[in-house]
Amino acid sequence: MKDFRSKLMSNPQTITGYAAGAFAAPTGEAIPVIDPATGTTVAVLHESDGAEVDTAVAAARDAFRAGPWAGASVADRQRALHAIHDAILEHAEELAALETLNTGIPFIQTKNIHLPRAAQNFRFFAEFINQDGGEVFTQEPGYMSLVTYEPIGVCALIGPWNMPLGLTAMKMAGALAFGNTCVVKPSEITPLTLARLFEIIDAKGILPPGVINLVNGRGHVTGEALSAHPDIDMVSFTGGTETGARILGALAKGIKGGAMELGGKSPSIVFADADIERALDGAMLGSFMNNGQMCLAGSRLFVHEQVADEFIAAFTTRTKALRVGDPFDPATEIGPMINAAQVARVASYVESGLGQGATLLAGGGQIESDGFFIEPTVMQSNSNALAICQEEIFAPFATIQTFSDEDEVIARANDSAFGLVGYVWTADLERALRLSRRLATGTVLVNTPIMRDLRTGFGGVRQSGLGREGAKGSRAMFTEMKSTIIALERPALPRMGTGN
Ligand code: TXE
Image 1 (cartoon, helix red, strand yellow):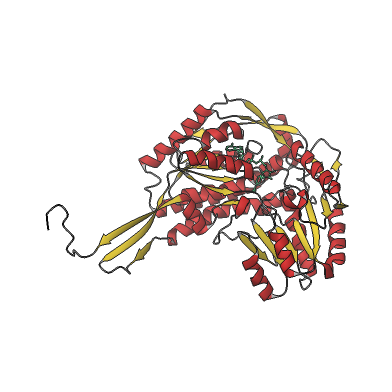
Image 2 (cartoon, rainbow, N blue to C red):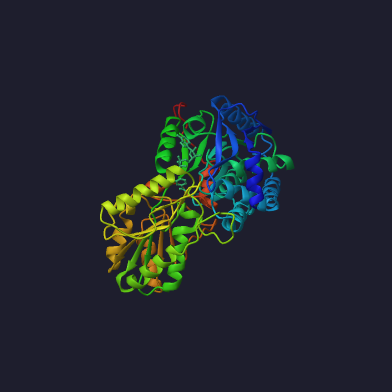
């Protein structure tokens, strides 16, 4: 896999947009795409300006209006979605290598988790639309009421850098399954895998021209041009909370909706009756998988005081033993941060934690290299009010607090601007169900680290976002609900204007 890196380092790839079935000329402003493990340029992205965004949106609108996709039979749509699923798996090794090269996420994770998941999104939604239907209401005598779901139109799909292919593939699969056309905008930091996926789909001729389109570039240029475009019908966004608020502002002007999958600061609560070894395994994965750069990271740990000494000592020892290094090395558990700004951000949180009275248990430093490596970090705090316990750090950085009482820990867990996931580690079923009700989060995971089930909805409350991704949540996001009410009989109507 290292060959991959040397090949791209000696001959950086050119990334451009794609509209109406053709790749754009490399004319836009050139932005280097960096391998965060080495700091070298591996590709050059040519930014899509307003005119190029107009072209992509017009292509999506034309394809939507002309109807080869929205009007296609479910069987035809399923065939195309299955073909994309198969194409991703056929190219899994290459796509995983590109993802690792661009994000620094260990190759064993991109290959074994991100790629299968990216593919599975397409298969899941292909199957879902075969069973999905509308509703019929017959309670009103003399009437039959139908609820049907129609494609919303042109969807703008804006993705983040922490899981570029997996997260955006979920948006593409949902949008396409329900008959929409789309314009995809990957993060300007990590455009490689989506650009390659577009090449693969194009080469295989899986979709009619204009059904999927791609624009590339920075948020304030390409992102804003897309999310404020008058001819898009919605935005599905995953990224930072401030960006989500900006996009919602742009959408509000056009009275349009958006689905926002934003940040998190998810509590992970370990009760004294939990299987402690399993809770430790889960807390390590929840804090450090994906280099700790996960919206659903369970990195705000609360440990019951009866097991705190044992748990904290083991968690600290294991954190110090994490293997940080080249993400292509199969032994590596933590790769580099995405860029220098993230390294500086982590350092500022270590400083802020120490300044506010937290104790540094592990890590806290940078690792000298040409890439953006840091030491996985653990800080213990006796207050949930510290910035390190309130703000999303998006790095291999866990905080630990201890607790003695269930009500008290729930109050502290819910004391957050975010509300994405709550993790509970306990052997007590009643307690698990009680916490599922009382944790103010979109998802509660009991005795398991990161687990997504597309049949359920994933999304957050409060500043963690709006909308749910997954079967019916994605349907709500990507369709318009239409009601049709039909009179079955002809009872006499008051005859206005007839004098009777
Ligand atoms: O996200 P941004 P960034 C969090 C995490 C991270 C922080 C910032 O805390 O440190 O957000 O990351 C596009 N109009 N998450 O800076 O800026 C941008 O080009 C339209 C949480 O990468 O939100 C990119 O494609 N689009 C998270 C996408 O939005 C705009 C995942 C995300 O960028 C835009 C990633 C604008 N005005 C970061 N400005 C999660 N929940 O998983 C930017 N963009």
